[in-house]
Length: 193
Image 1 (cartoon, rainbow, N blue to C red):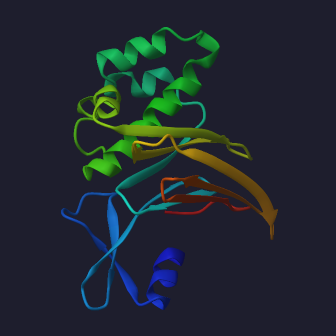
Image 2: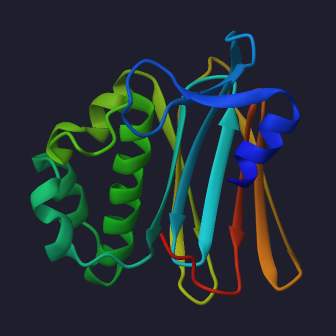
């Protein structure tokens, strides 16, 4: 709602691009012209994340420790193998990263994970030019953030800045030469869906 309010003040409103699946949203001005601004939104517990770019983008937040049993049936054989080769004390964190990457990729594809999650293959996406940026967000309920974006010919640099204000923690990621900006807010109280 906050993003919608900001865009409306700038004479923009939100409209789904293409289909009505989650993710891959674009801003449209009041005349109906599509603006070159894509954004993606995710939330988990007390955290919300928004990614904005001039190209299709996906963002997701997932609890830092996802039990293997909860997601193993949703992974491809290659993804299962990748997780099983990690030390057992890291398995839950690797599961969280794989799951968040799948969710973020589903947003770029415009399908969400309503499609069989096994068919959202991270390895194939990387071969087709999609990259993933992952980082941990600490707090009362730690989580992993995943940003999926289309790779550029020039290797991007990412900057992460964190600050606190009014009882909330703010993290901002921005990148050059990609025009990618993401922010995460960890509110002091749990949000209800």
